[in-house]
Image 1 (tube, rainbow, N blue to C red):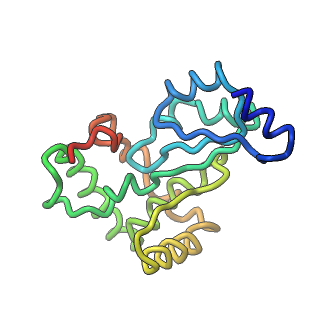
Image 2: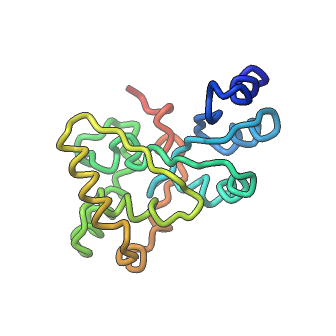
Length: 175
């Protein structure tokens, strides 16, 4: 960490950033390193870090927070009938997401963004796309929900939280 701090002091790097998967990694890093930015998973199915209060702790230390995996590596878009056996536990949540999507007239992407966007501790949202069309869809969805609390006010996001880490932690997915 000292090497990075020296490079920062000398102006070679602007920010020191880390990427994590869970609260334990964050706690370890907070005790042992100095960093300016953290990239972490937050999504409608994986609400662990939000619920734990660790995002608030990071903000108190003026650490910039970037949310990644907001679509849980694409799980929210997967066909529930084509899931690998290791992810069948996600089926009820995917069914609920589909039902809510139809009820409120919003896409799954809009719902996912409506969960993450209003979280005050989050400074940036990182998304991954494979095609230009996916990027266009994401930009359109974000523009639709970014200044609206409509979905936040009619969807009970807590009911989407999955506790099974074999589902919400892609490192555990069986390929």
